[in-house]
Length: 363
Image (tube, rainbow, N blue to C red; front, side, top):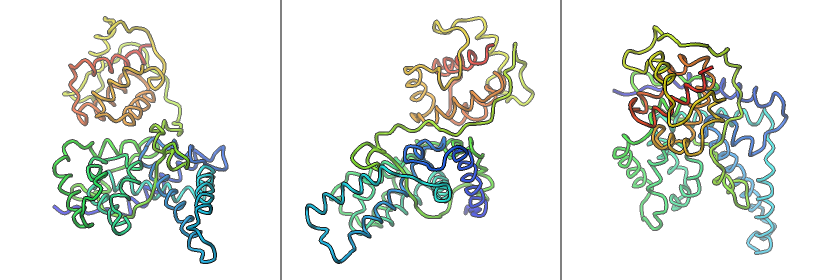
């Protein structure tokens, strides 16, 4: 079946998302810096698409300077001085709300596009590459691709591959067919937008599921001479957006909610189980999960439960911290993670993760 895109829904959603993000960020600030943008939202892909767009604008400024016919920009001294100037400029990113909001809006559209139709997105990136420099373009922008990057990274570093744009695009489509079962689900990727505003995939994809088009913006960071090089070494950011205070935590043993799925985890049974045993020597109440999970546990949970995606783990921990009690937390696990990520409820990593959730709400 042909999938129809509700572009009006996406347009409205992106506008509302961008407005809410800027309302939160600019409530106490006049400008945002590059480092602020890297941590602007819970969605790393949205943040890095904004940085990608700034990088493109930075390159446009350099091209304008070099187009001046009165000066010799090929001179070594001029080239070195100009490079230094542009790198310094890149580290002085200073964006007011009126300029950041449309960047956020476009980044959201591109993130949705990438999540729902990675083949079309990356084929669009190939079309955006300068003639004869597809590989170099993909390699330069690799640091900005945070979702479904396996679809295109196999083509990167293929110097002398000898393919034209159409051949590259066919290779991307063929690779997707091979690895699509290994990619993270659309729902899990788009769930990272939910801390600002929930995205309704059914309202966006009419009939079945896929995605359509907008454009291709920009975002990313590493650590070199320019800010845009430094983007690559920056870890995927912990969001700065704060949620409304969670309701008071519930006390005592919790009854199984009527809305609980019969084939999911049962809060009352888990409570009874964890109340009677000390799991791996761990006991006692802990604070927020985002602050209490040990490094070795983070590594295990990321690898075993969250498909190697540390951003998704951080999102899950924050969402669980915002729950009002153990019952609601287990309901969240059932609806958002258990089936989507194909968790085995009897496995050691799942039990250790759930025991930490129990300790979080055991007061």
